[in-house]
Length: 578
Image 1: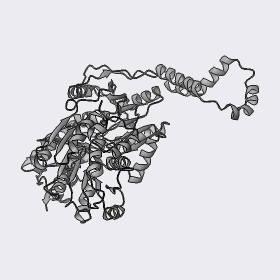
Image 2: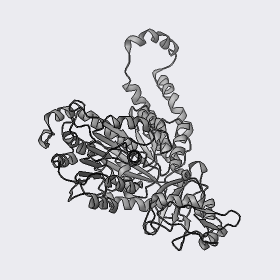
Image 3: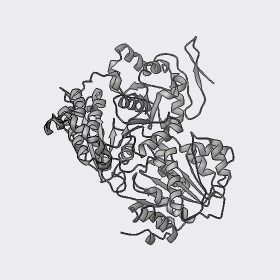
Image 4: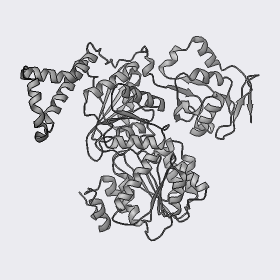
C-alpha cells in the first residue's frame, strides 16, 4: 500500500491531509496524483462516485497553483451547486495549513453580487457550475486568459444535464496552452468528443471495468404493484430502525410528494430537488449531514455532490432510465471502503431494467421480500429492547427521582413492567400492521395493470418521436414542448434525449392538454407524435387514442436547435411562425 509521500506530494501538504485523518491514497488517487503533478499533460480519469476523485485532482492542483500570483490559474467545473460547494470545502481543508489560496465558488441560486466581489479580490482557483460561470463571463467578471488548469468533474453528468453548449463556450475562451483534467464515472460519446476536441493526447485511467459497480454495495430489489411502492418503502423503513439513507425519485413532483407523505406519517425526512431555494437546500443538507434528518428524498440531479459518510441505504422508488444514473445513485452509499445496501422498489414491468443494470455494472441483484407486518413488529420491539439495554444511566442525576418511581410500580412484577414498557412503543405498530397484507408480487410478467391510489402515483413518462437527429438538444426540446404544448416548464421533469426519439417526464394530469395542443405540429417536415408510455395510458378512451395516432389538423413548423417561438392563432386553430 503506497503512502501520500510516495506519490510526490510535498511534506507540508502530506502533513495537512494527515491531520484530516487521511493516511493512504485510494486507487484513483494513487494512479492520478503522480501523473497530474507533472503539470504538463491532459488526463481522463474514469472512476465511480465515492472513490476519492476530488483529492485525486485537488491535491495536485494545490501543489501546482502559485499562491503569490493573484490571477485565476485553475478552474474546476462541476454540474451542481452542492458538488461545487463540496469541492471548495475539500480544497480549503486540504490547503488550510499549506498555502494561502483564495478559492471561490460560483453557482446559481446565491447572491451574484457577493460572488462578483469575491472573484474581484483575486481568485486563484474558481469552482463553478456552468450556468453561473457563463453569466460571470458575459459580465467580464471572470478572466480566464491566465488559466493553466481546467478540471471537468462529473463530466458525464454535466452533459446529461444539457450543459454541452456551455462547456464548449467556456473551453473555447481559455488559452490554447493549458492542461485539461476530465473526471467521469462513464465515458459516453459526448464526453469522448470533449476529450477529442479540447485535450491533447490525454492519458486515460480507468479504475476497474467501465460502469463496474462498487463491490461493497449489496444490490437488492423487490417486486410490488405500482400502487404499493410507498407502502413497501414504509415497511422497509419501519423494519430498519437505524436506517440513514437517500430515497431517489424520478421527478421533482414525486420527490416532494413522497417526502410530504413520509413527514405526515411521522418519519424524519425532507425533500431535495431543484425547486428549493439555496437557503432551503442548505438547511436540508445541514440537517442530513448532522443526522438530525434520517431520510433524504432526492432527484438524481439534486443529489449530485452529496458527500455524506456512513449512509446505510440507497432506495430507488423506480429504476432510472440511464444506466449511469443507477451507478451514481447507489454510489452514495458504501463510500471510503464501507458497506452499503441499494434497494430498488420495482413493479413487474421494471424487471427487465434490473437485468440490464446487472449486465452493465457486472453485479448480481438479490431478490428480497417486503417484510410482513409481524416481522416489522418483532424487529421494532427488539430494537426498542436493544436501545433500553444500551442506554447510559446517569446514576447521580436519576437517584433522587427513583423512590417515587419504585413506589408507583411496586404492585407490578418484573414481567408486567417489561410488557407494559415495551407496549408503549409496540402497540402503535401492532395496530397499524394488524392483518397487514402481503405486498410481494411474483416476477412472472403480466399485462394487467394495478388499480392505482392517486396518493402514490408517479408522474407520466411520455414518448416523442423527435431527438438529436432533428437538431434538438435538451433545452430546445423543452422549448418545443412548452411553446406548442402551451404548458409551464415546471411540469416537465427528466429529459432522455435519443437519436430519432426521446422521452420526458410530465406532471400527472397534463398529458391530455399536451396532446391536444400538439395536433398537426411538424418538425422539419415530420409529424410530431406523442405517446404515453406509463401504465396510465390504458385509461385513455379509444377515441382519444384514435386522435392521438392520426394527428389530424393543420401543420406548423419548428426549427429544432434554435429558440424561435411558435404560437397558435386561437381563433383559427392554425399555427404561426415568428
